[in-house]
Length: 201
Image (cartoon, rainbow, N blue to C red; front, side, top):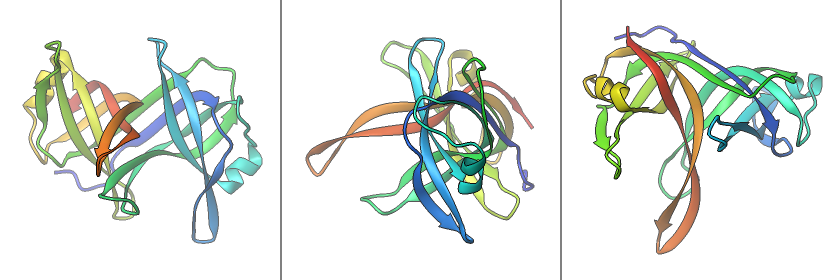
């Protein structure tokens, strides 16, 4: 099992879809969050939450409609302020810069599987595999990232086990769904890594 600081690199190019707003403060530094819209080749779009330190936004002010390149890493935390625990996935920005480049959504991750893979089929018969990847940070914490693989790659992933180290390439995607809580239907958004390539470590 790998115990070092694992790889977690992301590159997004997209359009700012809302005003930055305060997310939290840590060690005297304020962090803002803003939605970033990144279109897929299919024409659908992923709307992803980017967290950036105020000094980054001072150097690169952003407004809705601006196109920006974000380099950083995927982060997770459990939101316990509402009913039940919800895993919140964001993109933590290390750098921001204006761009005219084509849309991009590229992740490189390596870590350890912390749950048994779940291999299943969609109603249309396509194979799909759900994974949970633990990616260590430098200072003793880890990010827990839900991943999904399709087709032949899903079959390979179904043969993995808890504790296996893997390296993968993919994209961070958003998915809207509805959940009934206490008889009330709520619209929610889930975030997951769509796996395009995976190899064991």
